[in-house]
Each structure stands twice: as C-alpha cells, then as structure tokens.
Image (cartoon, rainbow, N blue to C red):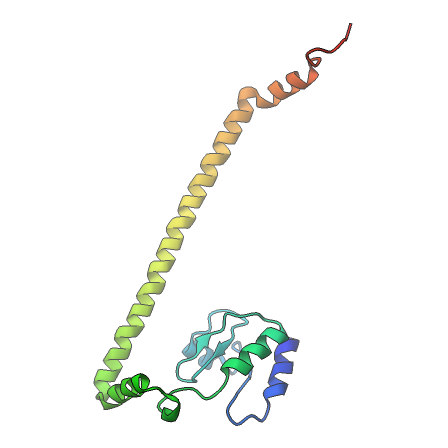
Amino acid sequence: MKPDWDKLMGEFAGSATQLVADVDCTADGKSLCETIGVRGYPTIKWGDPSDLQDYQGGRDLDALKKFADENLKPMCSPKNLDLCDDEKKAQITKYQDMSEEDLAAAIATEEKKLDDAEAEFKAEVQKLQEKFQYLSSEKDEKIAAVKNAGLGLMKAVKSSKPAAGSDEL
C-alpha cells in the first residue's frame, strides 16, 4: 500500500484545499495518532481535521484516488458555512451559541455514547468468542466419540466385504 499512498500524496501535493499525507505513529507523530484515535497500522483517516473519520475503502491506487477525488474537498463546517444547507447552518449556530462548558459537556455526552457502543460491541464479541470455543470443543468431543465408537472399523469392514450381487466364488 505504501507505494500507492506515496503516488497519491504526489498527485495532491501543493493543493490548497486537499491534504494527503502520512504520519509515523511510532515516532514523532505518536501523540497526534493517539489524539485522533489511531489503533492499528496502516490507518487512513479523512475529513475535517477536527473530526477525522476512518477510511473503509480499497487500498490500491485506483480506489484511493477515486475516493480522494470524490471526498477530499471543502465541506460544510464552521469555516465553510457557505457550503452548508440551512439545517447544518442552524446546527452550527446552535453549537456556536453554547457556552464553552455546555459545549464541552455535550461533546463528552456524545463521546461517551461512542465509548459505550464500543464497549458493548467488545463485550458481545467476547461472548460470541466464548460460545464459539465452547461449540468447537463440543463438536470435537462428539467427533472423537463417534470415531472411538468404531466408525473407522465399520467403514473398513464395509469396504472389505464383497459387493452384493458380485460373482465371486
């Protein structure tokens, strides 16, 4: 993926409105990566710098370029109100009119919802993993019991018998 990413960075180099870059999360960029929620490598983020989203598309140059051409452009935001519809403008105005404390509390409330959703997901996945392990062990025990009961010998005896209707003397 790195060669394709480097080509994509070259294609967008010098753009006044689009940034395609990379950050080494194991060195100087570690604090930035922690701030924006990078948990694995490579991770691609896109969108407003204050609200980056995880990229879920293809990782080859064609897929990356198509996504960048379609999505890396100025978007509705407090800095680009002219790109917003009336509903988004009203939402931005509502948040701008909030006190610093109220806005921080609202953000914390919504982030907690995200954290809770992630925690619930992980807990449920753990339950599924435990159920899978149980079912896998149970299946293995049943298979072993069937084999130990003589299935292999039954098959061997059956294949050693002459076929019905054969003319063997």
